[in-house]
Amino acid sequence: MLTSRVWYLENARTAGVLVLRKRLRKIPGLRFAGLCLVLLLLTGCAATPQLADTTQQRLPERLLLDDVPFHGQRDYQCGPAALAMVLNAQGVEVSVDALIPQVFLPGREGSVQPEMLATVRRHGRIPFVIEGNLDTLLTEIAAGQPVVVMQNLSLPAWPLWHYAVAIGFDLETDELILHSGETPQRIESFKRFDATWARSDRWAFVTLAPGKLPETINEDTAIEATTAWERLQGAEASLPAWNAIVERFPGTAMGYFALGNARHAVGDDGGAIHAFEQAVANDPNLAVGWLNLGLLHRARGENSQARRAMQQAADLPGKWQAHAEDALNRL
Amino acid sequence: MMKKICRFLSPLLIAALVLGSLPVVAASQPTPGTTLISTEEALSAERGQSHRERIHTILARDDVQEQLVAQGVDPAEVEARVAALSDAEAAQMADQLEELPAGASVVGALFAVFVILLVTDILGLTNVFPFTR
Image 1 (cartoon, each protein chain N blue to C red):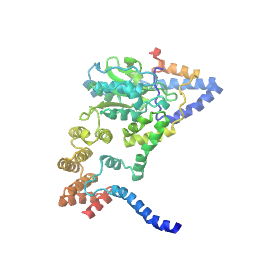
Image 2: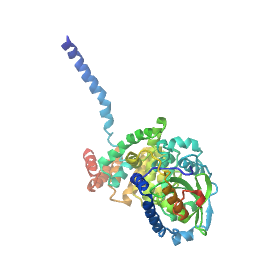
Image 3: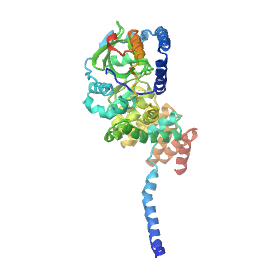
Image 4: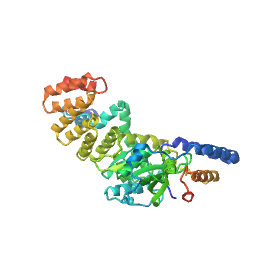
């Protein structure tokens, strides 16, 4: 078996297939002819995906990250193999055998997307799901990041879910280079790759040490990924990640809010107050920012500042209003 | 006789129950002044998640834990696997693993399927058979 199956998202369709298969047995000729017709019509739409002009100008003509180690998959275990490749490339020493019990689902003969991300977290790296298009994919590779991609190598009706690691490209021949299945540096045309990638809604992620951010990441995704990582690895380990986020997105309110929480958790209350102040300066409507600022001032016995901040939170309608009013009353 | 024992035991039992529940009460009261709103809570509020949805998300973890064991994951590994999921991912796993059909082999031996996939492979729409490249 070359590829592995990941059962995900397509449940309803899978159930439909069984019905279709029963019918096919009854009148194979008719159904088969119909399906072929549909497929012929479909091919009219398939074309090589085009890169944006700006991307094309920025990227080198061809590129290969040849320092990404290859691990051939066994049986259905493309998930653990793909993880081992990107983690090893990041300097995390972990073998495919160690990853199998952490991410593989025996009952499903595959690995599911949330657990792919979760396993990266366990190994001290932050998984960032990147925007699903060829421009971001190639931009990340050009920035030196091997990218884990999810493909459905087959048709939606009979899925063959597969994880591979994109490690290079050639813009002249419109080809992508992937460590995939049992093949290192497999070459796939942009067209064929994009057709199979599109069936996973172009799902892809990169893994980075805390303190580094993907080239193409947006503010919300970066914050979400770091919050999930902090939940597992703790505030102290995530401080560099929050610092990187406020540096990349200086106008972020939520990023400063999270930085404030992390600083407070490691005992740096002075730093936390600075961060909360910056959060509400960036977005004066961030009620939860005012609330935490007030709560922290109160804990430090700075009651007048606490009252001022809590009053701001209490004046803003929303989920935190009641909490803020309650805190004000107890002051 | 029975009454006497009851009269003696009841206050003891009441005292034991009250004392036993005290630490729980104490733990559930946040210490005033030091409990800040966590980033995860703030984010879920930003996304417009209601209180009930959030509780559902938190309970999802137990659900996923059971389902992973049912899927054949080593029970010694299950806890660490679930702990590494974000709240949103845990909820996603809990909801979708339930809906999954019992693991059937989807690419069957049906000849028609083979031919269709062969054709789509040659057309560059799929990538099932390596020899079509």
